[in-house]
Length: 122
Image (cartoon, rainbow, N blue to C red; front, side, top):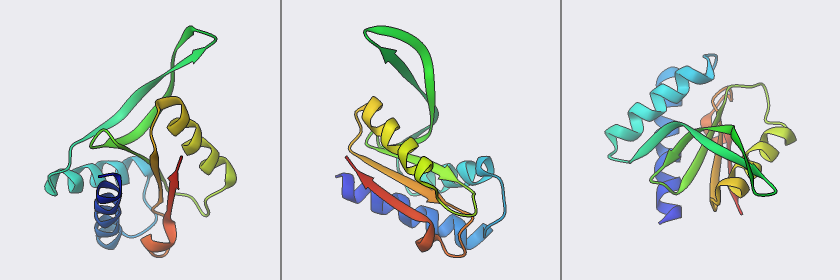
């Protein structure tokens, strides 16, 4: 199931990138991708709070996930010159804290969407 969902998200991201190209704000790509996911019949949630806990103490909302698709795949959206190690670490932390096995880091600032996809498995 995870592979099917991640491939569907990648297809939707490619469609959004083809239509809009690079150079817009992350929030715009997030809204466009959410719309495309909906058109494809995929369930998703936007801007999901991920509570932070430390030594059994709830520290409140520590993180906000861009998208969770089909309650299975975290999607982190970027619009940056290049994906840095800190971006990968951010996604891995979200996956670990939230208990998710698959995450996608999508950089819409890439010349082609294919070059802007980082798929991570925990």
